[in-house]
Amino acid sequence: MQVFPPGRLRWLVDPSLQRRLKDVVREADGVHIHGLWETHCMTAAGVAQSCKRPYLISAHGMLESWALRRKRVKKALYAALVEIRVMRRSACLRALSLDEVDDYRRLGLANPIAIVPGGVDVPEDSNPDLFWNTYPHLAGKRIVLFMGRIDQKKGLNLLLAAWALIAERNYDVHLMIAGPDCGTLASLEQMTDDLKLRSSVTFAGMVSGEVKWSMLAAAGLFVLPSYSEGFSIAVLEALAMSKPVIVTTPCHIPEVAIHNCGWVISPALAPLEQALTGFLALSAAEAKEIGRHGRDLALTRFHSSVVAKQMDQVYDWLQGGAKPSAVEIV
Image (cartoon, rainbow, N blue to C red; front, side, top):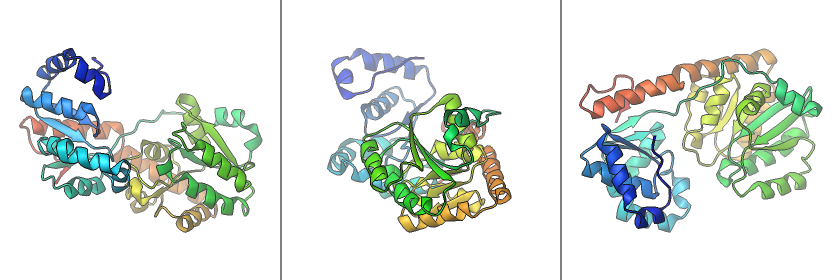
């Protein structure tokens, strides 16, 4: 495996990087480019063309309207000068969802688009013991879990506002917010203090490995109230762990509602409060049944082995093979 540096400056001052990349691409049948707006996209596309290799681009949610409004002028200029031309010349575009197809088409891109979602793996066995041993004071509480980057787009301000209404009516619940700080933790902690929620909210920081899986095992509900999302692997992990989920429409997982795995809501206070209230009104048997639906969905539609086979079909098709039978091409 070869690793190349991020950032534009290194690629501008070190011509050996492109020579090394060309050597790698010449040995490949094609190139799959992940993400936009960075040097790697333009550079990899250019090298693939010079080596006469097809390339595929996955935007990973970076063309969502909410995302495009961040650094709007800079992105619009770069798209007009570079990025749209790079995408237009790709052999195929990969979309994580039907919504992402619309994101590509809004830019006037007529390329074939393969719809292949993200994939997930989960451990065969995990238990909540590590979580309960770490937080013994939460014994007997129903745990509602957010797990992801502590970022403005994740809708955590909505979650805390809704939690203020929920916690005053339900004394046996606790909200766990786990993930790395991306610049908004201080304001969220201040909001928690202002709403007097310290006794029912814990900021757990970044979790991974056994700690993460134990936290998911202990949770009764997973919630992701995002304003913008590419395709959340955390939601898929929660589904695979048999947890009911609350997601917003920008999470682009309508299957949650279709398969009765939880709630799909708009990113607003009232729907979020209603969904939380709906979960807390469930019996244990009802919650378990919803969780079972989620696990079935995750393992049949979103398991990494399923997604890997779909991507393999797309790669084969780009080399002149048959059109994928398990992948929607639009």
